Structures are given as C-alpha cells and as structure tokens.
Length: 152
Image (cartoon, rainbow, N blue to C red; front, side):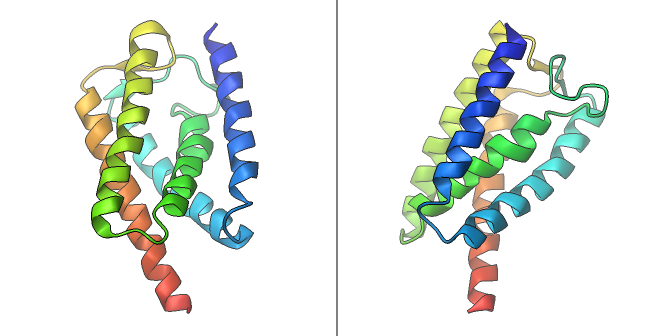
C-alpha cells in the first residue's frame, strides 16, 4: 500500500508541476523548483543522517536514505504554487498563506507517520515539521524575490 501512495504522490506532483508552468514564465517556475530542490536536499540529508526521522519505504531506497520524492518534487512544486499565490501579496498575506500551506503539509505528514511506513519519527515531531517547513518556504520566497529584484 505504501508504494502505491508514493506512486500516486509522484503522479500528482508531476501533474501539478506541469500545471504550474501555465501561470508564471517557465523559467520562473523552473528556477523556484531547482532552488527549492537544491536547498531541501541538504536539509533532508542532515535530518535523516542525524537519526531524527527515517523513511522506511521510499523511491530509490538503495541510493537515498531521504525522501527524494518530497525533497525534489513535492516541496519544490508547493513552493512554486506558494510563489504564484503570493506574487502580488503583502508580507502579512505571505505569512497567512504559508501557515495554510504548512498546516496542510504537516497534517499529511502526521497521517503518513501514524498510518504508513513512509516516515517514522525518532527525535523529530510534527512541530519540527511545521516550523521547519514554514521557515523554509518563507526563506525560499524571500530568496526568489531578492534574486528577481537583482535580475531586473
């Protein structure tokens, strides 16, 4: 069942990625995607190697201990949509929307941790997920905004 969930998430992530190219110029979406994947990979490896959590069932498990599906597809796609929905928003709107996105991701992770073998917490908790994801999404959003200002 767990591998089926991973395949469904992969398909959903790819569909959402393709749909994300319709709203922004493709290079914006790709830039956000690759920056997020790059940064999240470092954090994911550190968290797993420190033994804070484990992904017992994952894609390419013989090569990666972390969740490459989440770090390299799903989170980057979420960051693209966050950027799109906050493109002309105030900073307060960023915070509110980020809380919504982060709450959704945290609830999904809690359900996966409790009812599947996709993730197991050791010293990690849902609070770490919420705060870490919130800060990560906001930092990526600020970074992209700064880069875009420098390029224009």
